[in-house]
Image (spheres, helix red, strand yellow):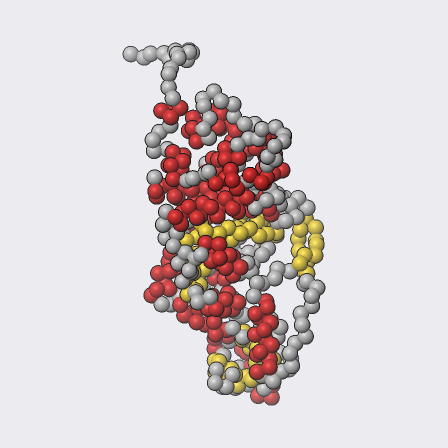
Length: 447
């Protein structure tokens, strides 16, 4: 028999909010495993102690933000509307069924005026990592690093040409020292010191969000983006570092500084790292060797002009510090440039009549030049790591760690787009998203 639903729901029921939240709800597990008491002490200095109107509880404020990042709610106004009707959200925030929910403007103004100029987001992220370490979910032995792009809140058609300071690699001082030693070893005069005036380059600068960068990469969309350089620990996929740059910064530039930051902040004793081909540079491989870290880095085939010899066909002889071309001619050392590359030149008299000249060089002076970095030995040793059994096992874990972390962030936590404009605000979004992912991982593993 078909029954009609009563037109109104006026029945009074005596329930507690705790009864309405399922025992296996994610927020129950997070509340059980994550200690949020540190937030109050962390932000105490950002509030006036004895003046002004009573403030919204900062712990509740950040738990509100975490709900938004956990469930991919991009709008703060929508977040408040969801809290009004979601019993689990109210329970997590310690609000009763009839308690008033904070206004969206209170949430946004606190974020903009009180927290955006501080490092509170970084400190919260670090504390969540420390809590994971205390639960033995982080080893700090094997780390995986990669970057992903977030589409900036900017129209890719609105830009101007501008001069920007060129990105500075964090190992330039060591490179200059190595170049000077190499030139002296070969009887060359030292190069003059680098200009103290920073190098600049012409870029496309967004008129909507000047902090974003115009990204041009193979297989990636073109436009204004930010890059999140993220590191994930091998044991339980806990994110241990988040660093945001504009979209036109190469992955390798901030890597060593961020690696050192993790070792100092968390006391990691890193034994190995897994990286993709974007990090396969002489500076990175030398830096890993100096830190006694086993680097497993993917290989990318270099660009090659059809009809020419491959560079690998020119054999290097370490004993004589020279190259030998496919036709047997010796290329001798000529100089070492500021970027750390040794130049080896052939004898133009022999090249001019060589039958394979068209496959080797079309230089008007009939001279072939081959370059070799002063730290090329480090690259060769790092390249051999990926061919070992241990190296294959380490690299195979990349897709299960950092790549999966990015996939979850984009699929479940609204990570495809930057919610805000400006690098500091986007960095806050990235840190809060990563902290939410870590909280979720801790809760699911420990609750």
